[in-house]
Image (cartoon, rainbow, N blue to C red):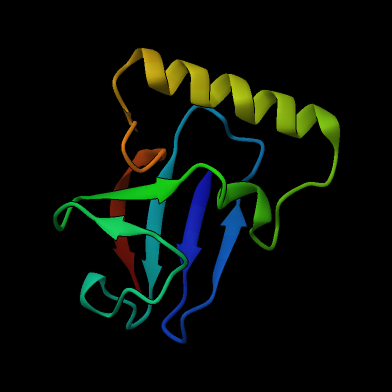
Length: 99
């Protein structure tokens, strides 16, 4: 699953059924310094915290109950591995920059 941030500030969900990986992709000129994206916080150049409640609201998110159930299971597994920030209720995501 990829949360993709665009230079103009929009965010969307790509590969929503890939529950085995979770990352944030900054497209084009998008950068951590210009983070206008709905509560996404950059820990450093390599990691970001994405609010759990934000993901299902992104453009590209499937509108079916089975997706929401699988997403909840992914969050549960991420919690078991220590990838959930309990203070912000966010999932840690690897950050990639793409042209």
